[in-house]
Length: 152
Image (cartoon, rainbow, N blue to C red; front, top):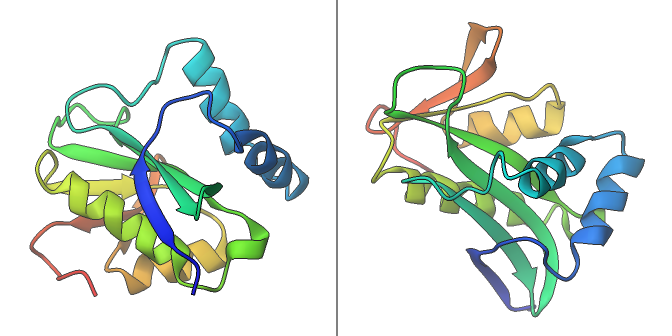
C-alpha cells in the first residue's frame, strides 16, 4: 500500500506542472485558472477558513483541491470547494473522496454550508455520495450543509 498524505500547500509546488498539463489534456481549465489567480494574487486561499490542499502519494503530488469563501454569495457562512483534481493514474483508489472529505472536515469550523459547481458525471457521483445535494443555481450545482446529512 502506498503512503497517502494530504496537507496545505502554496504555489509554486513541485509536480503542479504534471497536474496542469494532464487536466488541460482532458479539457479542464480549472488548474490553469488556479495558477492564474494565484499569480495575479486574486486567490491565494489565505482568507479565514480557506485552504489549498495537496494530495500526495509518498512525495509525489497527485491531486489538489481548495476551499474558499463562496464569492457568489454575500453569506460569509458559505464556502466553496474549487479546483479538485486527481491524476488519471491515481483515480479509482478513493483518493478523490479522501481529498473532498478533508476539505469538508476543514470547512466545518468556518462554513455552515459548502457549494461547488461541476458538470462532470463522475465528480457528480462522488459529491452526491458524500452528501452534496443537487441545486438549481446558476453559480453552483451542489451544496453540502453541515449537520443535515453526516459524511459517509
